[in-house]
Image (tube, rainbow, N blue to C red):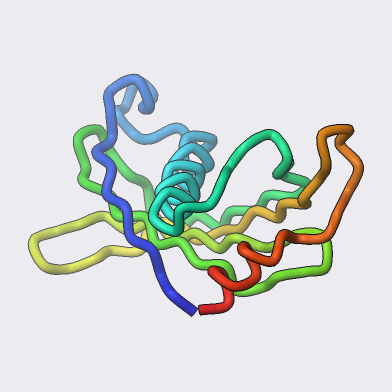
Length: 128
C-alpha cells in the first residue's frame, strides 16, 4: 500500500485567536492530501465520490505558519466504496511530529447518486 505525501503550510485564516489551528481545518488538510493522491494517480475525483463517514484523533495542535505533511493511504476498498486514512505531521527540521490521524469513507455513485461498484481503475491503483 503506497503512502502519498503532501505538504501544506498553516495559514492565519485557519487558526483561532491563539494562532492554533481550528480542529475542523484538519479535515481540509485530509482533503488536500486526498486530492493530491488522486492527481498523482491520474484518477477522477468528483461529485460521484460522496463522503459517508469521517473521524479524527487529535494528539497535539498545529499553529500558524507550521509546515505540515499529510500522509494519505487507501487501506480498504469495498464493493461500492473505499476508506482513506490520513495522518498529519508537523515538519521540524528532519523530524515528523504526529499531530492527528483520521479517516474518511467514500462511496462511488452514478450520475443519479445511486451507489455503484468501485471502478476497476480505482481498484487497480489503490491496490498497488
